[in-house]
Amino acid sequence: MDSKDRFQRIRKVLFYVLVLNWLVAFAKIIYGLLTKCVSMSADGAHSLSDGASNIIGLVGIWAAAKPVDKDHPYGHKKYETFSVIGIVILLILLLYNIARSAISRFFNPIVPEVTGFSFVIMAVTLVVNALVMRYEIRRSKELNSDILYSDAMHTKSDILVSLSVIGTLISVKMGWAVIDTIVAMLIAGLIGHTAYELLRQSSKILCDEAVPVADDIKRLVMCIGGVKECHMIRTRGRQDDVHVDLHVVVNPDMHVGAAHNITELIEKNIKERIVGVTDVVVHVEPK
Image (cartoon, rainbow, N blue to C red):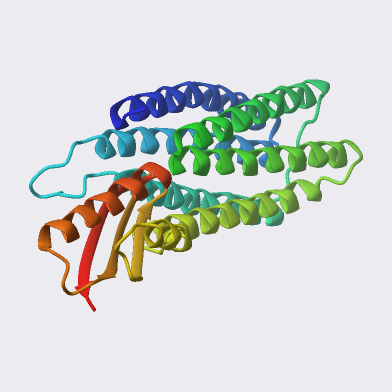
């Protein structure tokens, strides 16, 4: 699958998920406001942020799909990872608003109205979220997409929040209305944790953390005739766009043409046998 086809498939997944997320979000928010259930409204806002994150993902994929140019000789693929930062910012803003609303509700308590329809809405949206998460995780693996995986983890936190809200509805039905406010604060905490995890994962790529393939590369290189030693192996990039540079030691009497043939063979073997490698730079040292 080429990059263009991959980006088109990711965009299609994000669009489908966006529609489902917003349907779920508006159902929770509207009913939460009508029944004065702050935890359900908070859960709906969380689902709404899922939709907003899909839009950020679509913009990020559009930028990442641009081809290599003079100013970007390594391409634009990191924009897919960079878009995750936008999702993190949305989550932090959402966390703040939910926490502020929960604290205000604590000092000015309002007993939510809980009906059987409240449970129906939560159950239906829970099933939708679970299906969306499974779909995104499966597609993220197939397309090697960190934006789809990050969005799936965001949806996973939404599922946990929804389970907490169902527990809250039961508590309110039993006369423990204060639980509604407490769960809203727990929701804020879950959102904060999700934001932290997304930031931690994306920073690994943006800060060029090494991709753990050095041992595999060394084994491949040392099997090539004429190579005496392989060292200073460095890797960076996304799982689908790994850049490698390394040093190999050859006989000092080797002809330049023969040394060049070895570097081409090294590049060919690494790209063919290690998934995701798109660029290899080989430095030849005589010894």
